[in-house]
Every structure is written in C-alpha cells, then in structure tokens.
Image (cartoon, rainbow over all chains, first blue to last red; front, side, top):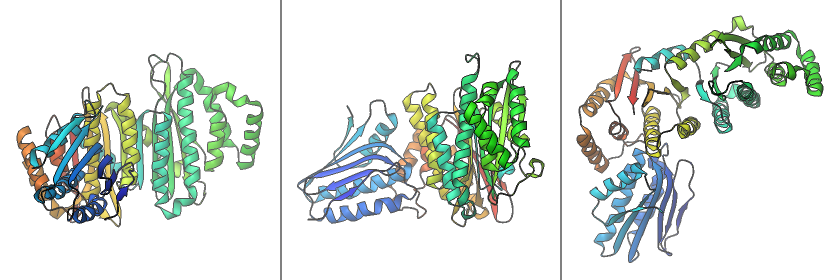
Length: 126
Length: 368
C-alpha cells in the first residue's frame, strides 16, 4: 500500500489529500506558488505510483478558490496522469467545484472539461 | 496614470532597495501588511537587522497618527476620515518613513509648536517631556498629536521633518518624515538624500493620476504577498462585484509573477516596480522591470502576436499552450500573459527602452 500524500494548505499552495486506502482524492484552496514545478513534483511521483495499481473507482475532487496560470498547467498535467487510469479498465471521475457567481473558477473548469477525455463534472458549491 | 508613469517613478527611486507608496485608506489590516512587508525587506539586508523593531514601531506610530487625525476631523462627509499618504523607503542604510494626512488649518499652529519643541530637545530632555506628558496629558489636549511625536523623535534619534500644504480653504495636508540610520549617526534634514518635498511631489502625482499603491523592490513571493493583500483589502471596499474583484486579483498575480520570473536578476534579487490605480470605470495596472537586450525581439514578437488576436483566438491559443507538454524551467508556464490578455478591455500596452548594452526597461500597462 502506498503511503498517503497529505499536504497542508498555505496562503499560496493548496491542501492535498491523496489517500488510496480510504479512496479520498482532494485538492483544495489556493494555488499560486512562486515555483510551481517544485510544489507539484511530489504529486506526480505519488500519482505515477498509484496508477500502477489504482482503486476500482477513483473520484478526484477539486475545490479551488484561486489558482494562477502556471498552476493551471500543472492541474492539467495531474488530470492527464489520472486519465491514464481509464486505460487500465478502472473508473476515474473528476468533480470541479465553484462558488456561486465565481465565473473565473467556473470558466477554468469548463476549459479543462473541453480538453480532457474522462468524466469531468462541474458542480456549484452549496 | 499611463505607461509613462512607471518610468517617472522608477527613475526617481531606482536606487532604493524598497520603496512603497500608498495613497488610500488605513485600516488595521492594511497597516499590519505594510509592517510585514518592511520586516521582510529588513530581514533580507544584514546591516539593517538591528533596526527591525524600531522601523515597525515607528510605522505603527505613523499609522496611528493618520487614523487619529482623521477621526478628529470635522465635517467627515466631505473628507474621507481614514485616507492618507504613506511612504516607506530604504536607501543604503537609511530608512525613511513618511506619512501625510489632512488636518484642519486652525490646528496647524499647535502641531507646529509641538514639532518645534520636540526638535529642540535632546535625548534626555525628550525623556523628561515624555514622562510629563504621560502623567498629565497636557500636550495632547492642545493638538491631538502628543506622545506619538515625542516617541518618533526618541526612537529615531533624528529631527522630525515636516511640512504643511494647502488642501482647500479649511484643510491642509500635514506631512511628517522620520529617518532611521543603522549607525544612529544624526543626519541634518538638508543633508539627507531624500527630502520631504520629494515625498510631497510623489503624493501629488498619485492624487492627480489616481494611483493607489506603488511598490518598487523585491518581487519574490514573500514580498509581493503583503502587497496583494493590501490591494485585496482595498478591492473589498470598492463597490464592484466579486467576479471583477477576482479578475483583478488574477491579473495582478500573473503580472507580478511575470516580473518575478522574467526580470533581470541581480544576485538572488528579483527587482521591479508595480503600481495600481483607477480610471473612472476600470483599474489600471503598470509594471516595470529590466530585461536582457537579447530577449527584446522575442518578447516584442510574443506581445504583438497576442495583441493581434481576438477573444476566441486568445482562448484557443491559451488552450493550445496549456496542452503543450513542455514546462519552462523558470517555474512559470509561459501562459500568464495570454490568460491576462483574454480579460482586458484593450490590448496589452507596452514599451521597451534601451538602458545600456546589456539591459532594457520593459513597461507594461493594462486596463481591466
């Protein structure tokens, strides 16, 4: 079993919970690190391990308040990695939350939806 | 405020390690951020580390003065109570703290008298006066400044500079400048490199061009974060909807991180200038930084290309860049400007002026 990846959120980096055992995959908060590559590299390492033997059904939840353009690039890369799960015959689904009236986050979700080949749903947060 | 404003300021403050100018509202949250920003700056300059506490203390004292004077104003309807001017700059081993606020004309004589008294006294005499005022509050009843001014003089060890400028029939702007030197050597105001009159000029320019904040200095994340938060606080007070606030915040982050990623680095320092102002309906944001001459052509091409695209084309270009699998090694993604351009009401206005054989100065001006 691969160990959980848990990163606490800060003012400029998101909270990450990747927990295979409890089937919990969440990205929350703000993402505008100065060096995006550095922040995201442990995520890629974890995912590349995980997709070797993924859970039957993986549901990634994204609840972002704000993220910069270089984080957008990284999220796309993260989603592409998760997308590989679909090829293994297992299920992968992404839920993208946005606050009511938050056009920026909603728009970013729609963009990802348009360029990914896996179920990607937009949900207005209550 | 237009694209030329950037260099107007930059040229005057280019030798400063930090220069922060603010023309706006003073709430507790905002003043805390100013102190945070200065502390970060001081921490990064070894020779100044001993001044850290003093600078924070004196800044807090200045803010209290601005707020106290504001609250004491009559007819608050026509004059915003907590509005004021604030400048902090670090040049070599000197720290300057300047504040400006409205004062009723009839109070000027009292405040002047207090300043003259404070400036006449030596260290020991100031200590005695401080005790006296603390015990019977005599000074305060006359003008409302009181202990603050005495503390400023005691902590800085320098004479206080001040000037009064007409605002209208009833009010004047009262400016007050403190300097701090790391070795405690006393400087005559007239020998100082930065006179209070220059600060007044900056304030005038900020008022006439409707500029809220100017930051010149380090653009690493710890340095720009307090600035972003100061602006966020100000945006909350604006009567604009939350969508546009987030849009402005996004544009700011991208522009500021662009400076940090692409500016010409001296050592580890990422240096540039940034300002935000308002026009009637929109926000105006300017940035300025040095770039290497050999980067000029590529950047010009990129900006001209972006400026030639319409909304739909920009979106497609953005998505195609998002899907590219290479990631630049400077920590950015190379898509910031494209994403910004999608949200502007006019093209990205820019100018590049050659400084010497090695570097050019890039100014960017956007309206959102």
